[in-house]
Amino acid sequence: MLSTRIKKLLKDIIICPVAYNISDGKREVSPTRFSSTKVFFNKNNYNIFNGIADLRMPEDQKYTAYDDILPDWNTEEPYTSTEQALDADGLNKIHIKNKLVLIAGAGNGRQINLVLKLEPKLIVVIDFSNYIDTLSLKKKYKNIVFIKGDLVNLPFKCNKFDYIFSGGTIQATRSPELAHRNLWRALKRNGYLNYSHIYLENLHNRRVSIDRLKFNLHNKNKKNSRLFLKIYSYFYYILIKTRILKIVNRKLFRLPFLIELNGKANANAKYYYDGAIDYYISRYRHVIREDDVFDWFIKCGAKAIRTKKGFISKK
Ligand SMILES: C[S@@+](CC[C@H](N)C(=O)[O-])C[C@H]1O[C@@H](n2cnc3c(N)ncnc32)[C@H](O)[C@@H]1O
Image 1 (cartoon, rainbow, N blue to C red):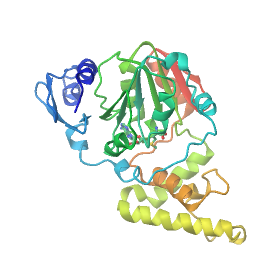
Image 2: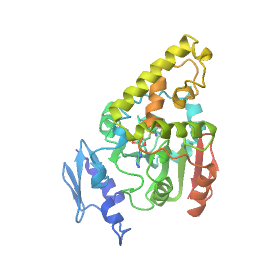
Image 3: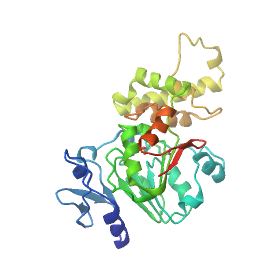
C-alpha cells in the first residue's frame, strides 16, 4: 500500500515510459491516479505489487536475466569499513544529507545500505529485475521507495533528483550511453551523478569477456548454465586447495577465466560462483572504455572526474 506522501512524490517524479518512447515522443505524461494495485496514466496503466510500481515497458515485465542471478548473488562487501567504501565510491555526506537520492541498480542492496548511512531525505531505488520484490522485504527499510524500471527507458521526469548513484549497473543495460543520457536528464541542476564499478576495458575484463563469448552461457538455458558454473567453481576450489592447479598443463586445460581471475586469494567455492554468475549469465555486459565515459559527460555538457572506483560529475 502506498502512503499519501509516497503517492504525492511519485505523482511529481514518474512518467509513463511507453508515452515517453512513442515516435513523436519525449512527452512527460504524469500519473492521473493510483489504486492499491495500479498506477494510471492517460492511456496506460502499470501494476503496483507490495507497494512497488512496475514501470518497465510491458514486454520487459515478465522476466529479466538478473531474475536468475540475484537470488544466488550474495557478494560480500569488498571494503572493511564504511569510510573505505565511501572513499572508494566517492560518496560525500554533504552532497546527500537531506537530499532526494536515486539509486540506479539495486543488486542485493549493498549500496542502499551505504547511502542510508549518509542520511538522505528519501531514496528512490530503481532496478530492472523482479528480485526487487524480495529485496524490498529483506529489511524494514525506511524512507525508501522501490520502483521496477529500466535505466534505458527511465520512467522519471527531467530535473528531479539531487543525487544519482549507480554502481556496477550501467554495463548491464542494453545501451549504456542511452542509460547515461536518461540518468543525466533526471538529475537536477547542481546535482551529482556518480558511477562506481563500471566494467572498464582492461586486460582482466577483456579476458573475461572473450571467455564469456566463448562459453556463451548467457544465451543458454540458465539452470544448466548455473549448474555448469557451480561445478566449475567447486572443481577450481579443490584444485587450489590441493595445489594441483599449479602442476596442471594449462595448454591442455583451463577453467573459465572469471573463476580464476576473480582477484581474491583463499576464497571459497561459493565466492567464485557468485562472481561468475554475474559475469557469465547476465544478458548484457559491455566493456566500457574510460575515455567513452568521459565523453558521455562531455556530450551532456559536463566534465566528469575519476573517483577511486568510478566517475562523478556535477550538472
Ligand atoms: C551486478 S548488479 C550490481 C548492483 C549493485 N549496485 C551492486 O554493485 O551491488 C547489476 C544490477 O543492475 C540491474 N540492471 C540491469 N540492467 C538494468 C537496467 N536496464 N535498468 C535498471 N537496472 C538494471 C540488475 O537487475 C542488477 O540488480
